[in-house]
Length: 382
Length: 150
Image (cartoon, rainbow over all chains, first blue to last red; front, side):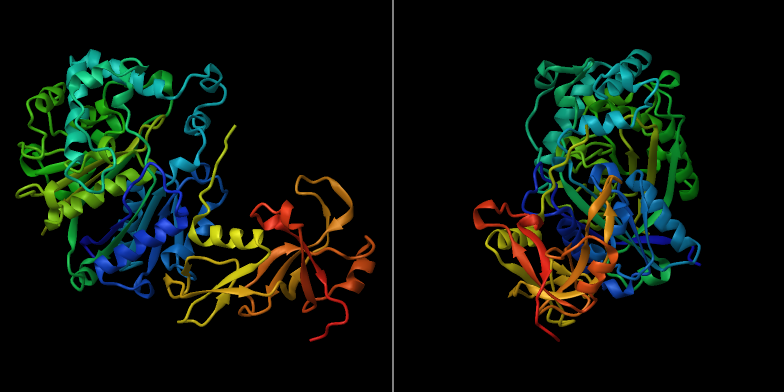
């Protein structure tokens, strides 16, 4: 049994709005090849494999049965987590901590470009009796949540728009971010309402991608060149019903980050977390998640963002990669892209996006509408 | 309604292009030495990109088959469908190709079993070139090769 678990390998393909030249299996093979090279391991050495995938995203039932080939996992233990990418990492962590495996691979991928209408997939996630018959695009759930969050916290629409400005500008320094751009807050506020108060530039755009992470026990990680240590991990799910939600607070993220902080022995996250990659599927979610994770007092994340404190050069850099607004929304693989970015920052491999003296990094993930499920991960260099 | 438009990828796209041209393409891995079709971009056992593309004959042998009297949506069939795994000549044994058997007379189990057996040689029956669309159905079915023994 290993007390400590490290991320020892990271491999990802550059997210792209279209990826017509490669099947999702070929993209996964590419990401896995990179991850194994990064960890200096071969597929023969890996004890167990986890894929994060949803049949309805693939258009194939029992899509997990198609996993082994592209990971080098033929005739090995394989399982699929149909959930947030962080839940896949949590299972890998548990396999190692329990002594079942020393070296575990987690894979997540997404091909939104192959789903003709993603709104249909989201609609299938709603309750067929109470919710689906209303026939509104499921972005409305984000619209409802955003309004209540703004109402309860006094956060301004300007502050939400400044998240878009920051993340897309930060993405310009990340060669793996297809949506980098100079988008001013007034551009954001002038963009068409989707489900008002949510505006079109506040919704992250889809990207196809694949990420593979290799996790190892402490003993095994010592033989890998660049381990980054998992200090704490957490995840939580709230009740699903739309009509009985908290709406303004991301309670799942509070619980998940609390669990991760407890494991990491972190009492004051504002002092002990150096930077964060935070779910920003919708721009307001970054603010809501920052507050849920205790990195900003309730209702203050917007003002911190407007003041520039969450920029790469600021006191608490948030989404220096560009986040989902800058890198693209990759379904359940988004969490793994965030984790990959934190790992690169901690290794000093982030290039022009590099944060000086990053310290411990936090990831907050969210499974997307209509869910109230998310995760938290604290990574440290020791 | 849920609809998808899958990117076939490097290997399957080239395979489908081959079918449109009336050719069965396969791939070879130099580490395990296997030649397989349908092709893939990587060897799943050695976890490396494949080494070579090969053009294969459109003949093979029956690995296994079933005589099916129901459609995919459970309607009864008088004339059965016969799905089979075909080992294409020139590929490594047990690296099969899923398709249908045709050109078999009669419709009863007894009459069909007299005409088919595991290990029997078969040959592809193709759509006319102008009717092919780069799909697995560009081959209509495989039919027994009469008078050929192995």
